[in-house]
Image 1: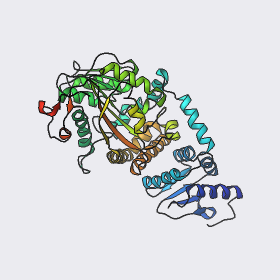
Image 2 (image 1 turned 135 degrees about the vertical axis):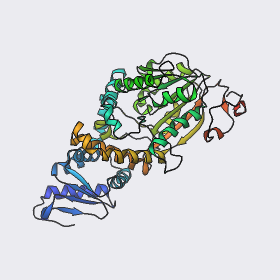
Image 3 (image 1 turned 120 degrees about the horizontal axis):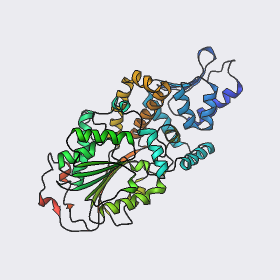
Image 4 (image 1 turned 30 degrees about the vertical axis):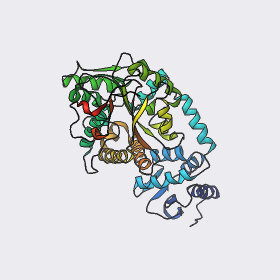
Length: 416
């Protein structure tokens, strides 16, 4: 530790407390610049704290304090941002002392951002109704804003997102003429893929006006408006009878206290004879989702453990056929997004300003780090109703080059 006369006792105390919180994590800390700097630690990355207010904020609530200070430029990371966040996240995971203020903020956000019908609309508007041109800067051309599927790590993002759409269809064993409901359809890539390449008829629900308008225009352009209907409505208002239910990346926005409503929506849609798949970000043990991300990026978000998600299927007797964890695929997807986002820095700053750019950079980099270290998982759960007669006999269909032609030998006729 190097002490300098310009450093006050309070600054030194707060700095030492932060160092204790991080523990032996291999990362350097520095308060201030020049000859008055206070520094400590070893490692290839350094957290530079430019203002005492940022240091005090991090001690009150490490996550929000750090996030907001980085967002405003009062904290900087020298070196590899993603690796630095991996180190910091591991340190926070191992800390058993969750600050009372952090608990207070987390519980307050859960109440304020509750996913009621009105609350969900507000939460989704905050994130997804940003200008679509913003997302075009760093997503693939189809605007698939969920985990891609990389058949090989060297695949391009465009190839991997198309592969993901097809992988979902294969898991569902989708057949021509089947009726599909897509809950939380984003910009419509999956719904259009199902209609275009599998001959399905799709109703796709979403409460983001910006996304629905874009999806409708794309379906019209592709000549699929008669087979894909994009409905600007909450998943709780899904109506009609369907063969298949699919939800990609929506469960994170439902909220634990509203899982029973999703449970009933699934049953109304496919009864006890249909098939379904839920694709969602999860975790290995229950915990509050990031308070900073809920405050600045994803209002109302909740990340469940696998057990909590599977419980949605229990009341109506759905049988789980397949569970897969694509954590590494999401880490790689996010690496692609982050690289493209950083290349678009000038345009993002022009659109939204430097604080917005830094906030989203931290969100994307932090997500890469979280998936790399296993703090977050990506689950796909395929399920069928108790009276479903179409049960795959093996998993061979998941990896076949072309599984779009029905072969009766693939199916068991035994219901659960």
